[in-house]
Image (cartoon, rainbow, N blue to C red):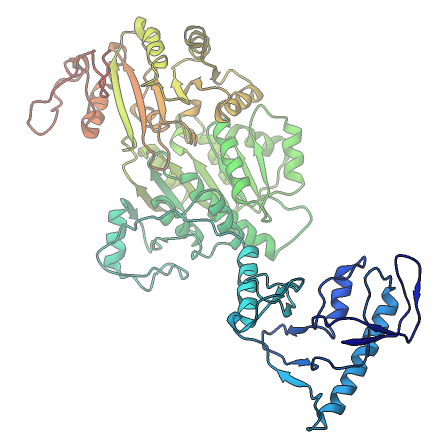
Length: 640
């Protein structure tokens, strides 16, 4: 094949090929893949105009115009070792394309011409393409002759089939990974049904009988007028999309029973009194509707400095800290800011935070009263008022302060949450909210069913030795663990004694420590830096100690309600845990209620406890003689 080169080229030796001279070369492929020039991408885009057929962006095949082998004409042949400028190369390629098109039109008008150009369609299947020769481009999918270029990727391909495969792989690689959802068995298994909860309060696909059956199987009890139906997933409950994504990222695959009923009721702007088992997800059940409400309000009315829209009161600083941290996680990426208002932190910093615009205040009643009385914090826009662990708030004497804060608000929606509901809580509910919906999930007056209770009769003088034995047993000590004591000085003394006797890293938390000290100790415990925390009741209420699977009640609390809360720290969201309880004659005022709880849970009862005169008269169940355990017992086989 003879090709006439019309451009000047310089070889490695510095000699020149004169313009117009004939350069003879053997036959070469229709298209050339690589030329020794600095920018391969630009060169390929220029060559594509004449030497390659392309598949258009829509995927439809286009025809390929080929010249017969042996066709003469003027063109460009970059010789080995030549040096061309991009300007010359581009202009000559364009001229060559025009000449080729003109020649093709001329030949196509002469049917009898032996140099007639053939029109050929793009090959649909890869098996229609020939194998690639040495030096020819290869298809990135099958390895055959890469006759075409894919516009989207600029890769060599042999057919439409391989283009489709290439684009599908590209789509799969760029598609965001989908987080695998944990499979959850729904409680209703008798008949097929579909729950659509976009329209509150009714779910069109479920009749009243199905809703009642669902609540019964989930152990949800409701009392009130026009109670909204439960939801089955977050995505269909009208929440902002970003909030749903934050819930999934935080590990909420589907709502817990308390969340199923509380979230739709709160979205409907109903006041609530909620009681549920410890570790059932109460915190998220009120944070989710608060974040959704605040996001909606801020998107509708935007100002530079905005007053708070919601308040959450909790009895302890640790619980407030935890609620605010969870609110930050769930509200990430939304117009939602928080302020932590508790004693121990600088007051000026808290005031500055509120004045610069927030949506949620999380705090203790005492510090919030200080802000109201001394610094005139504006709460006129607050329309959601939440009391977390309301029974504990009342026990600690915060009733008057709570009522004072409530009177400073303008008819807010009130939500009260607790693991136990007594007459004082109901009285408070009637004072704050009329026609409130009462929601109960599980049996809040009993310890979590997922907690295995192990009660050991231990005299006071032997308690330290007993706890040392537990913590040096690899079989029965499961850190991280929480140890509850009755006094603040006892927490410090016991933590030091455990460290000396066992070598474990232990911290103590109680009310006499500063906020920074308590926060740092809690951080070290939650991050695994220390394996044991000895505390008073400050960690017994509402704290989500997710990694804790073992709780030791070194001292029995003053009430059976506190016992329920402290034992509940050993299990969160249904995960099994263990509570080891030390009892002796000093705890006799709780014997009767404790035995009832142990009997209901099927837990072993120490002989000393069962035979105590403070326990007599309580049937141990079913008319059958129950085998009692002596001091030497352990329900896992270990003798004490």
